[in-house]
Length: 147
Image 1: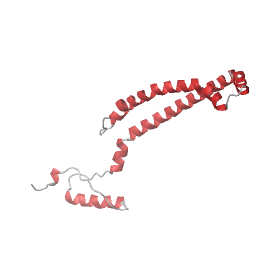
Image 2 (image 1 turned 135 degrees about the vertical axis):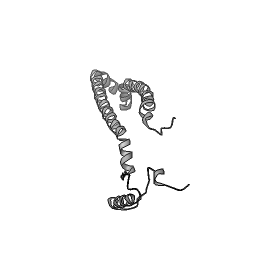
Image 3 (image 1 turned 90 degrees about the horizontal axis):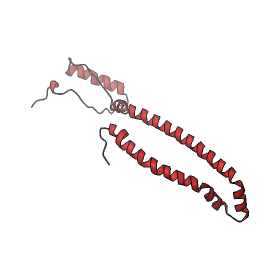
Image 4 (image 1 turned 60 degrees about the horizontal axis):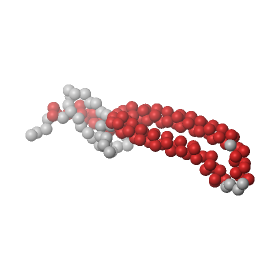
């Protein structure tokens, strides 16, 4: 079956040139010789891919900023709780130090409650984050593979 210009609507070409505009100009002049009816419409893969994923990129930037904001606020709150706990237990820390407690034991004593709270929050947040990305964010990709 012979090839006719009506059979094809898209031509993919790999350009190995340092001057892309001149190469596109040459392709356009050749196109006008082959098909005078249809206009020449050139697009680069990089631009098409960037346009396709620009929404995802913007969403990642917004989610990243909100995550940074939430982590910063949580860290300041945790720091405030540590300072408050240390101030209220200052006499106990002094007595334990005089009785021979090591600095490691005192740090463990003060941080045990906070580490428990952080562990519980991680056990809640990690599965929720995984499910959110698996069921909401990554479903927008056309070639997403299910895990």
